[in-house]
Length: 351
Image (cartoon, rainbow, N blue to C red; front, top):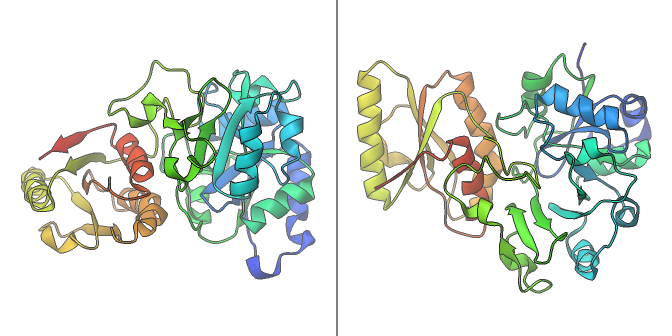
């Protein structure tokens, strides 16, 4: 299969920009497209065979549920049932935007889209390309991140092509995703509201509507959770991983730098290629010749926006060992470390 990359001019979107994408989607095919979080791999959420094609293209386990993307809040009533009042309040406040809600699914949603679960994950993206694609297609789009399963998520069209060329027909290139981390996932299907995946929106953002909101234990766990049921994407399997071995170092900055420098020296002496992932404020403390600055701690949104891009750059360079600082502070700390711990296979050294 030939994969076409179509550049989209965001400032002057036209219906004809989406003609080929709509044709593919309505015929049961797949299209990759940008959202404000990461690129998504979209197919008709109500078409079981399209969902199966998504799993096949990504090499994704079929019990890992897909998120359904919509363009209007009214779609909640079509896709879900027994919708709590809090869901409508959250939708009014945070949609369109980087929030996914898990609700009890209606019978119209096939089990293939939900990974066999009785619940459905729904979000309304704010990205204009994503919104117009959904509206023009007239479909609800099941769209996990547009990457090969287990790899770092894609924030640029080039990343999508690298992972999925030959597996899908079309990539809409709308430039770089602005947030860089997948949406926050909130489970409203049970007795207690839970955050199943941290993202740009944190627990504190929801407390005005849901003061009892907590993180699911699997989110804050420091070890892999292979025995749980994957109620949301990213809960069960290793994700976001570069090909090289990634190890996170936690502790005081000077102690972390000293420990990382020793580790780099040891691995380099053994003939291995090494790199360090660090914040701008501390990058100069490392002796490794390959130090990647992911962003600034005082502007943690820059770390979130560039994390996946930097992880992918290590693969391009053939780096065998990657030593990373911890970024657990601040509003986005839980979300950033959730991705980084999974990428490292929970290999964390405390110093």
